Image 1 (spheres, helix red, strand yellow):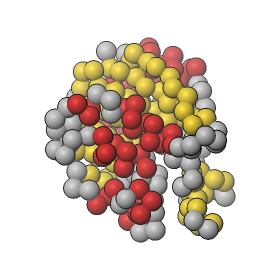
Image 2 (tube, rainbow, N blue to C red):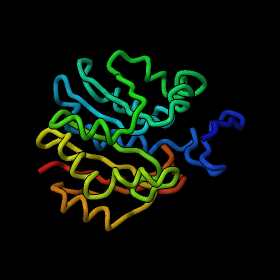
Image 3 (cartoon, rainbow, N blue to C red):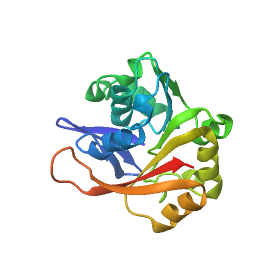
Image 4 (spheres, rainbow, N blue to C red):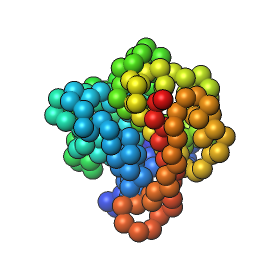
Length: 206
């Protein structure tokens, strides 16, 4: 991965292709809003975010949950965490400095498999969603075993929210078969009008 700057825009490239831009983060914030609708009403909520990105999802989640909550963010690429502590930090108000945050440089799948019934919400913004883009190993988060791990890591009525670049009927079906009540939302990539639409799968553990 590589971080570049064009004027006031930051772009993260993966293999020379644009993975994310600081100009398009509306859907990341929508991911947090949809995932944390229930968690925001819970004292000492515990939330897991898979994928730090440019910090926008983390910031949005922090703005929603209570002051006594814990937000664990798992980022596989150490450089991404360093960029968020450096030049990307101001974009989302330095969310890694928040005392509620526990940052882990690890595969979010490892945390899911080790945290039985721990989380009120799990947010996955890894790669391009179920259609892996940067690392084929990320596909393991979205297959039957990955869905089972996410369900096992959630408390009853906990929410799994998954960001995706596009709709995926097969993934939606896997979520339903995996024990989730599923809703699919289409949201704008930008906060204002314009930009492409992204998909967020919202599954409630039943």
